[in-house]
Length: 126
Length: 472
Image (cartoon, rainbow over all chains, first blue to last red; front, side, top):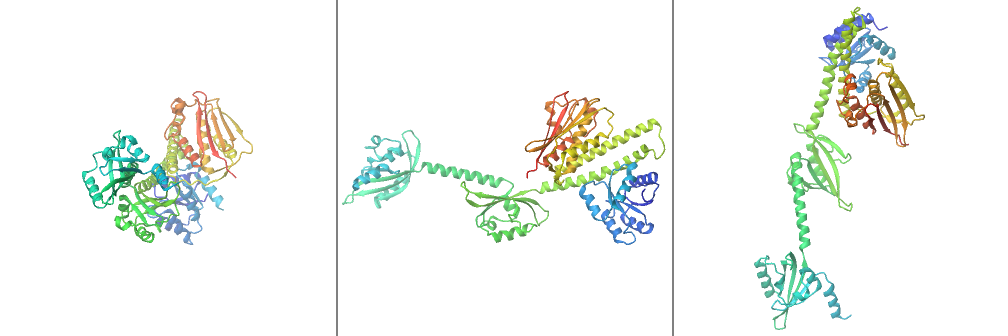
């Protein structure tokens, strides 16, 4: 089982739509999306999701900066964040985790296995 | 031995040529060294005029000066160009002294000659070599500075002057503190003249920034005595720029190709997964084809990026003790779960107590995935894949054999090149990028190991990875 309220901060409209559909269809999640980092931070404060999927590269700011802002705000600091990125290097993954993300999902991912992967990451973070 | 006998002995053994002539320059006596020098026998010389050895090349003015000096001072020293009986020229340094009677008339002339030919030849050869070296030094694009033992700049070639934007007068003779200041003002890095690192990269303060690889080499004599140090400044601005462009390209490719591939794989995966409802068999088949080819493209992009990173040296190997029996067994177990649609017998022959190797486990896993993956791919229905581990005195080896179509002898090396696949029906049928073995070789070599293939067409192939044993 994975959280039902998931915020997706991802700038590519196709990936955004696909992830939304995947999480709805395979895990019954309610998904809201933001295309830019600042909008994502605002939406996280207002909507209070149970999980945030955050792209590493956004048009207005780096994903790591968004993560830092979320962790610095008491309203969002406890919400688990999983990074999404096409950069699959070990260094990037370590850097993301060290900044406070609970995990890292590398694109391209298998949509049918995505919910399971999220569940495993959240289980490991507990 | 009396004085006369001693003088006679000196006359006989001295290396200098001695000649005594009368006032008429007719030779009266010569020593053995003079005969050896001139190429004439004593009998051929005595009774002849001293000009028997003249070549005719020595300028007349030299003789004029010689006779003038002998007349006025009784002595002359100079150089004469002579000719031997075989026609060969030789140069002598000669001192002539006039021996006078009490009345002042010349009784005899005594000449002491030394053969300068060899000295001259060596000097000329040295000058020629020096000119050649100077020409090379000035022609090369690398900046070269020579420092003496005290650290003063003794030589700077044209390229060095250009790189440092200084004149020869500013550099030559400059002391170490002056040079440290001069280099410090030119390069960004602190203490650019530090020799603590054999090789370091220096970048200029001025725009556009240029990058140089600075290398130090000691200068010693043939018997090892220290003469100073050479600093070589090699302009690597272009290479640095290309490296940066390559990194940028890898990052861009990584993002720009993976993002659309994510959308394609995701969409097809949802359709194939049936979450949007069941598809007709033909629709399902077409979606599967699209999905398989998307996965293939993803693999190709990943392998190109992996190889680019490996080749650029950006992949840091995290070495730890690795048990190759366990790693190879794990990879084999993983691969055996992938359906191949063929009945393949897998056998193993793992050496007990195999010593560990110092390796990056993840990178080595990639090597074994590539080798065992190939073995599975090329093994036909009813064939076999064999995995063996062996310890030699110096290495630990993993040997992967298959009963596939084999590889022609002229292809055994080529298959490790990028985008190279062995020709033949089996290769055409098996999917692959032609990068797997190039990646494997790169990883193995970065571990100080070796990888090679052995095969004969129709008799399967054997791939061996040999990694150095950890020495205690």
